[in-house]
Length: 132
Image 1 (cartoon, rainbow, N blue to C red):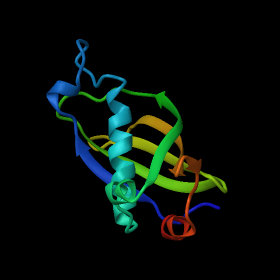
Image 2: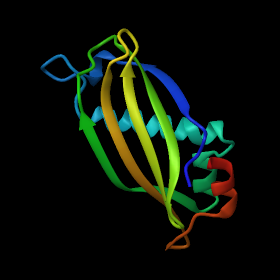
Image 3: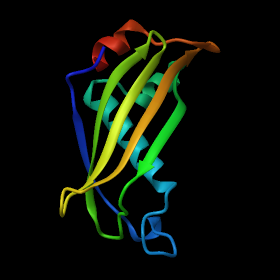
Image 4: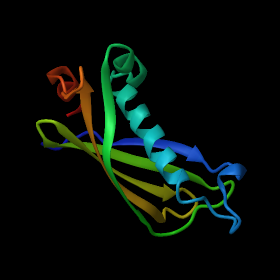
């Protein structure tokens, strides 16, 4: 099942996120995607930190990132995200980053996540209802 909800979150590259080549370090993109996923959850009425405090741990089990074009210091960009249900116990975040100055696709990611409660994989129905 795929959500009809597309979530867009805008950000700006900070100087310290760039490597010696003057472009965003490849590992930083994971932070961008993670931050956008947390904001997506909040937008759907789901608080990542609150779920963790209540014993439901939402965790990444796989991340695949394709780098297409670099971002540099001061670039503004949007992270576009949507979710679909990969299985009963796995959600797939389909995400990409677009540079705002020219609309260029810079990065694409597919992130597979699940929930863990009491040491077992678990995604409660209320979470599926909120996200899909």
